Length: 535
Image (cartoon, rainbow, N blue to C red):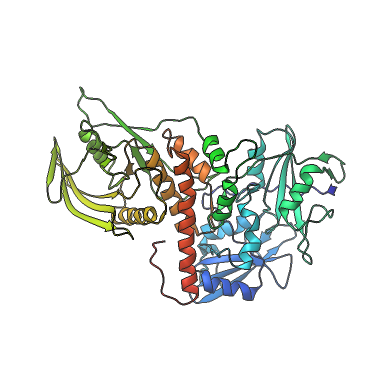
């Protein structure tokens, strides 16, 4: 099979807010319907130009109006807005105008604000077409050609991956390592009249999966050099758009006939890593006392490959013991933490999980120079009528210093064995945590999270919270990478997300949250009252 090597994508901007899932093969009329039905002010999509097929159009919702901005491909094969800045790819152009809103203006000088891509539910045909491969393990979402080369740099010959083309939005590219120091990029093309996929005009296939299956067993020949290229070793992707997670769950539930392991178990075991401890060191301690506390900073990594939304930091710590009460409150004060998240009961299965480190309602606890007072306590019931979590408010003072307000949220709905059957209770709890973080002062320190050992449930809650914030701020079609996120957290504290059941629960929780968002979108589009969901 002959093919032509496509141009390697130029390096892409590394900003962690890189836009993705914004290109849809729709008409201007359909773009307006989608934006009015699912969009909020400043959200947008890109589409092919109807009048000039080689060019593109940005469609942006602005209040009640839709603005269409033409994008042309200039003589140098770069993209611009008819005389403005030039860009090597549509993604780069979109990123620039998100970051520089004053650069995109109407003729009257009014700025056109682009905030983020509109999130279109997968049940829409346009979304199905645009994101059909996204749940497949061979598809690497939201990476450039340069990043693909980096991923393959340590792999053996004929290792490959599939990604979206930066040069041809809506198309896909295969990146293959051919020798120790050489990588090629092969464009997968789609016929407009038949919808069939092909490489270089050869055999045609209904899906990209069928095309890959064929070339796993049949070589390609590079046009011109006649070099043979094989697709032999796939680098599986761990990244998936949040709203395609149900299909990824289905794939991970499948059991390998050879290893007898599910995809979940394989991921859970593979992503165990060496730990680079980031321990909290107590500073304000007398010379004859230890500065040690069983606690680690958990910081959200910015930039590639995860591009996570980093709006808060965490401290993961062990539940209090009778002899660590003072150290715990020293840490709380030292770090200026204003939110404490407790993910266990005080007693479970007749065993102590955490010593009570706060006073009863309207009472005080005195620990040397610290005074803690509980001024509010609210029990929040679940759907079964039983208490699901407890919200408390503390006033904490250190001798000679102004007192501070702290929010304490304790989840008591975790079963004694395994994980909750339904994730809704955990999502409601983390919603309350998010509200508390927003109520606290803007200069607050890390959110302190603990269970008993400070690794299993603690890691599970932290990872879910990170991913929920990603989806809240980027939309339900944003890419998430659960295995790599877990890995980055484990690099900072050993054994975070301790069991396979907790690992599977991460996927279930995100699936449940995306389902809630879709129900809200459906209610809004049909004119029904909005469901209660903080997003």
